[in-house]
Length: 149
Picture (cartoon, helix red, strand yellow):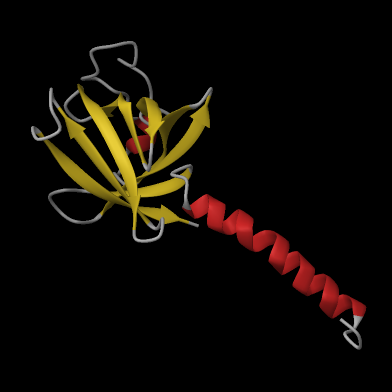
């Protein structure tokens, strides 16, 4: 590009290099998500989704519930019983299935119940539709989580 200052050209090249990476992030559920309370509609927690050995997991990074830093999962019936709520892995072993992830489970730490889980991205990767269910997907409920930058 003749006549373009080197700094401007470097800036354009950097922007072109970063844009595909940003777009790829939006195509993956990996990242930080804000959960919303079903009853109040208020933010409830921040959950970090991460990939490990080709499977998707999610752990609680922050809770907006007062006193959460001292709470443990009292009602959990598996190996998570008694573990601190902050850092608790609530989504486990989801596998990619086309544009969705499924085959794993999700924990409701309030009840201690573990449900089968599937999820998919919506709204250009800014929303995550998370469905927990028993048996078949029709017997469950969905939540919409918001991506955090």
